[in-house]
Length: 137
Image (cartoon, rainbow, N blue to C red):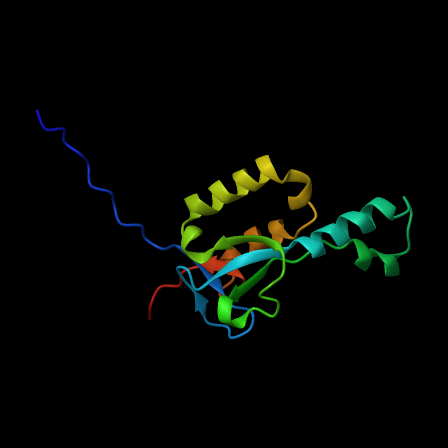
């Protein structure tokens, strides 16, 4: 007896990465949302060395490392070591949640040194590093 299979539904892109250099959408395998390992290490080191009480002018040294959004061709540092999420793998809200959970499980202390919360909060701002796809028209 032949087994019936349910056809996979086509994925509807809900999110888009916007390149921070050319300001055009990053799709499929053309680029990614990425974080420099060196930037995260610098933040973690600064936070570990920061005194319990510091002046406001010193707060910048413990700001989170920023996620970057680039086409491969636009990347300012294509050879940098880091962690990236290919554009085609973070096109839906469900995929965004899955990546967040994955990073929380595997890279929790690392993730806390980044501005991932700002990336999440920015999805309703057109043109931000990661935002909702805007309806045509």
